[in-house]
Amino acid sequence: SVVSVWQGANLQEREIWDLMGISFTGHPNLKRILLWEGFDGHPLRKDYIG
Image (tube, rainbow, N blue to C red):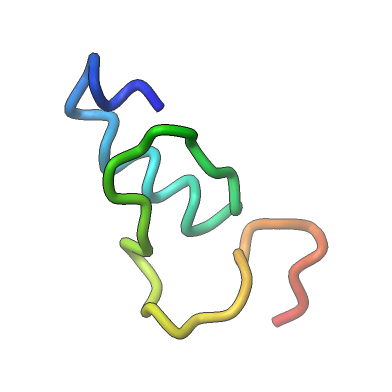
């Protein structure tokens, strides 16, 4: 994660994780930002079945 260097990356990293499932090591608050907490999966992945 680059949040410790650029605070503006917080929302972008959370959105990438939420939609694509890419996790960022060291991110302080990596949780869903666009979809609800109980949502299962990451909709922009090719293996997602919706």
